[in-house]
Length: 380
Ligand code: AMP
Image 1 (spheres, helix red, strand yellow):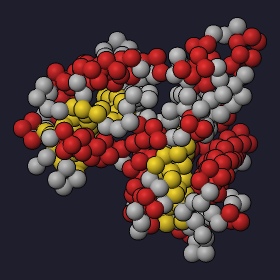
Image 2 (spheres, protein in one colour):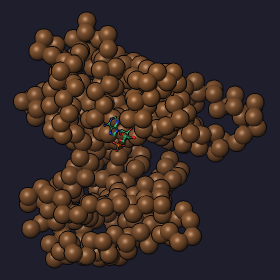
Image 3 (cartoon, protein in one colour):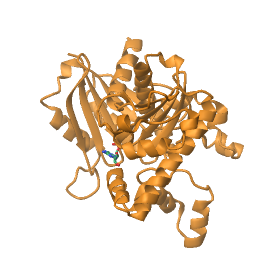
Image 4 (cartoon, protein in one colour):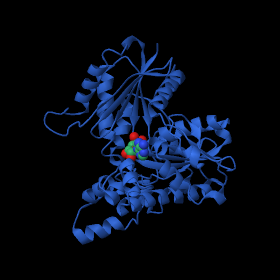
C-alpha cells in the first residue's frame, strides 16, 4: 500500500489527509484549528504538526509513506509545477514571503516540521499559483510603472490553481474529450472564489491577481473594486494600509453585504425577503456573470462552464443566477438537473444548449498527492 500525506496550512490551521494511492482512498482526514490564537491553543504550526502526527498514529504506515505533499500558496513566477523540496526550494519560498505574508511563512514552518518528522520521505511542494504560469503576458500584465512590475513583481499570478487544474481535467473526462481539445470556464466558488479561462488544458486567464483579493465577490473579500478606494478610505479616515487591506480581505464580500459569509444563510434570508441578503446574492451572481462574458471573449469558443467548490457544488440558486440571461450565448441550466443534489460530476445544462454546463466536485488533496507522485516518478 502506497501512502501519501497531504498538508495544507492556512494562517491559523493545518488541514491534513492521509491517502492510500493504490485504492485512491482516504485513510485519515483532519484539521488542527485556531493555531496561535489564544493561550491554551496550539502555539504554532510546528506544534500543530505534532498534533497531526499524534492523530495519524494509527493510520500512518511510515514504511509505505511515499511522499508528503505540501500545498504552498505563492510560488511567484519561480515555480511552474510541483517541486521536490530541498533547502534551496525553501529559500525561494522564503524569498516570496512579501507576496504572501500570511501564508508562505506558515507553509514554510510546516514544511520544516514535516521534514524533521519524516527525514527519509520526499517532500513535494504544490503551488496554488503554478497552473496559472501559462497566462500570456497581455493577461498577466498590470499597466503600472516598470519598477513595480520588474523590481517588485507586480503582476497577475492567480490562485486555486490545483483546483482549476484538477477540475478542468475531470470536466474534459466527463465531456469524453482530451484536455487539449477543450476550452472551458471554471468557476471555483468556495469561501474564496476565482474564475479560470482554460484553453486546451492550459490556464490563459484567471480572476485573482497579485493576491487572492481580486475578482469575484467572496465570503469575506471584496473582489474587484476601483483601485483608488483604499487611498480614498485612507484620506477620509486616517486608516493605514494594513488595516484597509485586512478590511478588504476579512470584513468585506458577502459578510459586509449580508452579515454572513455562508451562502446557505444568505439564500435562506433572501428567500424570506431580507433585502440585504437579496442584494448580496444578486451582486455575487452578477459578478460571476460578468466574468463568464469576459472569458467567453478571451477564449473565443467555450465548450463547457464548470462549477466547483462549496458554493459551486451545492448552490443551485447561485448556479442558476450566474448564467441567467446567457441563453442567447448558448449557456443555460436545466432547472430539473440543476436542482438535483449529488456528489458526482454531472451535466446540468439542458439538451438544447450548445455549451455544456457541469458541476465537478473539486479534490485538491488527491491532485496534490498525484502531483507529488508524478514528481517522484520523474526524479526516480
Ligand atoms: P469551500 O471554501 O469550498 O469549502 O466552500 C465553503 C462555502 O461553501 C461555505 O462558506 C458556504 O457558503 C458554501 N456552501 C457549502 N454548502 C452549501 C450549500 N449546500 N448551499 C450553499 N452554499 C454552500
